[in-house]
Image 1: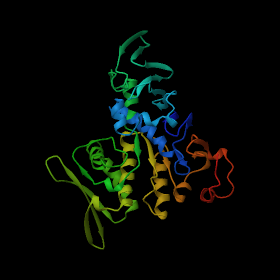
Image 2 (image 1 turned 90 degrees about the horizontal axis):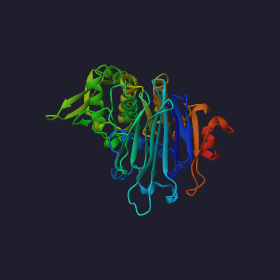
Image 3 (image 1 turned 60 degrees about the horizontal axis):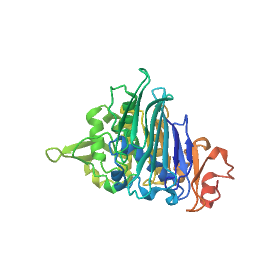
Image 4 (image 1 turned 120 degrees about the vertical axis):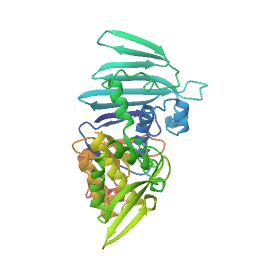
Length: 374
């Protein structure tokens, strides 16, 4: 479970710290441009690094992090990301910092460190990486290209290696800002690592059901609750290694088969939600950050949608959301709602728990009036 996130000098986030220890779910609210999606952007940097994209030039080409991401072009202060995660009753702390020396066009890894329960696993200063072996009181050092993050480079020793445990958790983070028009249901392979826009949804559900066949029941159960006329869904072969999802509906003794691609945006989000719930149950506990999960839903559907996600992650895993939907916002309490505020584009994002603020009257009404400021 994520316990702390610290980001400095990255886009609109300066000295930005979230302490979310013990929160299975949390909501981030605030005006457009306040920095809600930037939190997800910082997490995506770590996620992609753990999935093997560790060259700064490539991360920049994917628009994840680059020279333009220094806050107001302040190159004298490194971009810094710190994350603390409780995994198997041990606290993992990972620190990653980038700088841009004079005449450099590509970011350089300035500092990197992984600690478990306070003990260093490895540390790095510019090009030099030090591996710490506390049980034998030995250290090993090697040099790495200073434009490469070391985390994916260091060899894992076993299935129980803390490095493997941490990298797997990072890689399997679910960070979503889906674009339903890109969700086709087609697949040319299998994965357990969804893309934020949902464009590899077909590969994700194929990977889930291939590795965990019992997950079908979990997916089908949720879909039956939100779409009572659904009969089932199938992955039909359309080539040697390709499949396409077909969804079948039944009502009044009649049936209808629909290509997944032809479903509405909201219905595709129902499928996405079902797979998130099943993934957390079968290969979790997982961390999920979903940027506006209720974006494509009607007011009558949004509240139940958010409640289903929160309920599923209550005792296992962790889910963070952003929302502008009044029904979604009402499903959270003051104790797990964070308000983000930014006075202008020349000032950094500020964040406070709603329970630490004074809000007059109904929260949603106050948001509509624009009366909430930090």
